[in-house]
Image 1 (cartoon, rainbow, N blue to C red):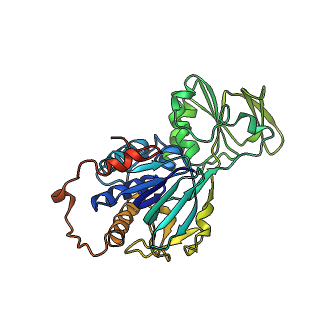
Image 2: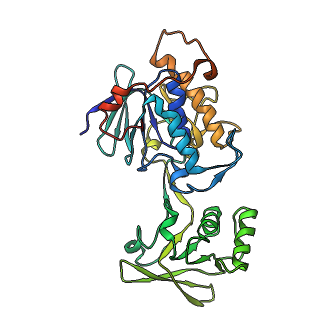
Image 3: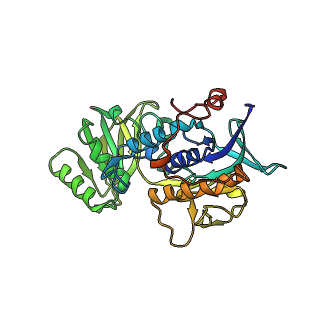
Length: 354
């Protein structure tokens, strides 16, 4: 088992809201450790749509999801957060001195005064199409997440799905893949109207082919390398599509995992919080971002950013009882140089960049 890490705040979730919580806590001299089930920071922005543009971040008329994460990680870096990646928090236990012990799937133990749950939709995974033998190709010829579009340069690619993810990646990969086919069970797509229009324009130009109304029917290959995808209509008409890769985008299966067992007052798979402080029903535990709910909640990244600030200010009296906080704006206070470097150097998991 790893040694116990002691910190002020443990943040569960390294998505955009979790990363901004590091900054807000850091501005109040609170040290943070961050745990995430993915092997990189960024949450869905990194795992699902790194190149997708985001238009509602203040100050950025347009910013790519991956760029937003890079900026948030850089913003948090002066406060030396320690990241524990590729592991899930499996245990949350209260100690006698009103602290929390978090245990992860890798045996990491984090002793913290307060916990912030910024887990987005919880642990998530792709909905797998029911194709015989698909497991043999997963991670090679069948991929549910795209992190390197260049991987598909000059390859034959089949995308399946009719929502925003399928359309977004079809538009991005249209100029990268040698051949691109988009399979959907209906002629009508569910994505944003602008994306649907662009998809049809690419089809008319011969850059990609819309294969509809068809559904996935089977896979062909040697058990390691994919060679073709078969699709079929509801009438049983089967068509064979040569393919190096199949990219199925049929949505995500959401799972709160152990969080559901922590007695946090769930409401339709979300955690009820006090809007003013982001506090849950359990003292010392806070929730921010998409996993948090209250009346008239707007599920926007910027809403999560505001909740991160509220949580940090509610946590500081718990960590520094009796200390008077003289609030100052960041324009007056500035951002301190790297703090807690000794704590970072002692960590066994991946630290933040210098």
